[in-house]
Image (tube, rainbow, N blue to C red; front, side):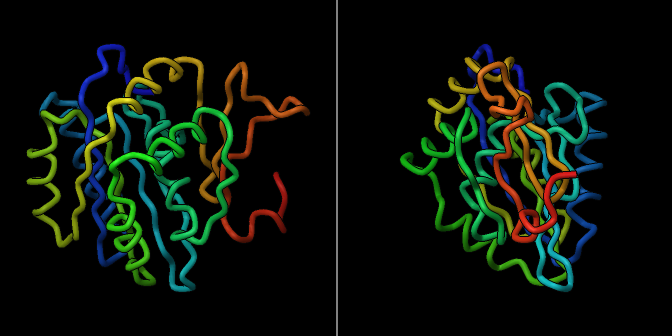
Length: 208
């Protein structure tokens, strides 16, 4: 999770690319810049849409902790909000559910984001980045070097506060076709991690 104790201003940047590899390549470049202190990022997620029009979470990074295969709470909530546009099902609940509801009620460009994701063609990809506001102009400049459609949106301050209050107790992970959450208060009755959202075929395959 990002270190948001100071409740810094955050923005979401979403970039849609025409091929399946560009989003991962751009994220790798941005992470390299972060390691050298030239870029500030908090969360990064890559979504791909294959030839069969199936969306998959290909790559996630909670850059506040440096963990791969972990997705930040804000990115998780945005994906939950946009689940139907990706052909996924969101189940709600926990911190992710709270943040998703706050996004739905806030002055957040849901319709523009939905059109951007629904406009992804087979064989394309998208990159979701959450970053401190002071880094966004530089971030967008880097992404604009590639052929991408870009959307920017401020993350409501109430949501930043929610993550600051709960993030240290909350871990969100993805298997590519499902997102799970774990917290002391968010365990399912069987002791397993809470299933937050999944793709259209996950229910028929079951959990591995």
